Length: 598
Image (cartoon, rainbow, N blue to C red; front, side, top):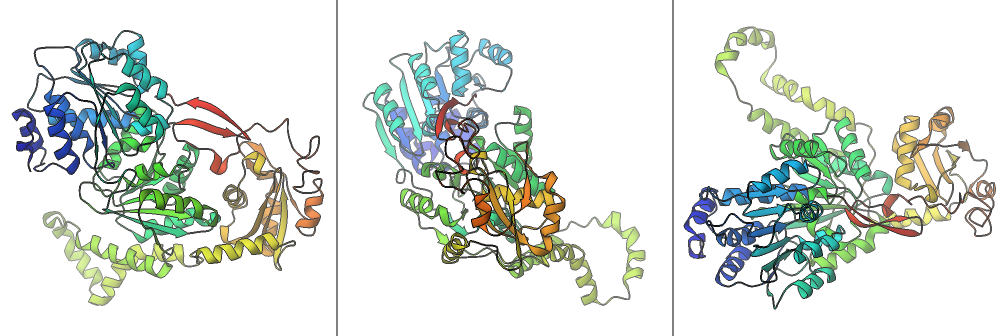
């Protein structure tokens, strides 16, 4: 089957062919004829990267009446990036239809300019929910002649808290319009929209609901929490030609990891909601042109990434919602290409990993963190490949070759090769020369966890310290390791057991490094709060008693005792604070609803 046989206008067929597409994807070949033949409501379930934009975009463009200047189609999507991408795709499809106008409207941009664009006329409006509702309420988006309303990635818009906005948009369109709903997953809220705003919709599912693409290989690496960042670097180093996205759970973590990677010399940058639109556009432009190899992103911001040749998706931390994993991993393995989805898993995350495996119906292969030897080997071969691909400008360099040859004539061929390769390779060898082995298995992690729980005193050769911050302050083991390393200029492998309590914590460092902690104790801080760090006398038994009986209900956490601070309503931090763009954030034991501005 080709696009010629689907029933599209000749102009659209020519536009698609000019883009280099000859044969439609499965969802395109099934959805387009159906949507062209009859005016119907429609639910399409397919994974990201299967060609959904063309599946709804081509029949929508085909339905536009060129004799009318009114808005006849609307497409609502979750993020600014995806909004711009859809607008670009539609304009490319309609290249041979110069009379057709597509206008995108989204938050974070000048609304006056968008209003001006709408006044000039828009056959199709592509919008994010929040900005669209604003324009409708101002009377600037007129929808009385809309024939088709498309909800793209409806599940994600509902996850982001846009239920009320979607209701308002659909209510503003005529009752006789067709509603086309496209989604990668089918949660209860998507079914509710289908029931309330659609009449006997045709349903099409390409692949199982919530399943990931067969082009994606799923791998996981068992790690210790303190080794998460180091594991990320080693996986990146092991894949010198990696071109991928690293997913983090919060905006703060996203920026932190991107900053660390850039500081450590990696070609990386961040993408999250705290960036301005201009900054996000700049980052995406660099990423698409491969000036950036690794993009560190939140789930929400990454929804607009439409790059067909990503080699890897890396889950720095697993999402809480298994359906989010489907969206994340769907960034790779697109357009028929192979991709790899990698997750770093601690002992505590095994259950969540099992839930994801069951939902996406994919087998995850356990891998070991690459060894230093294998990393260096891959790096060396990559350097050789790069050397072979160097472009030689004969005319420019010939004038210098005589002197260069004279200076190098004492070297044999083998010596010359060694020196050229070593020039770059030595830096990498030096970096990993004293690196520790961080590979492990879940069995080893479980054994280590039992040992840590049973330890009541400092190990031989280790010094134990008290710090006045704990779970109630949002402190977790990973955060404490970062605090120690950054404040004391210490390497992570020198840190031993960590015991996080409610309002305070204990940690161990090697005796030889104890003075580093003592001398820098005044520099310790977390979330803007100065911390008190003291050497703990004895083990956790004696150390805990200094705060009113450790973690017992009758002590540190009892009313009037410990460090309650008026009930501690601050957010619990760590894995309980998510940047999923909407829904709720956990504050202590309470949940506060919030809505992401778009």
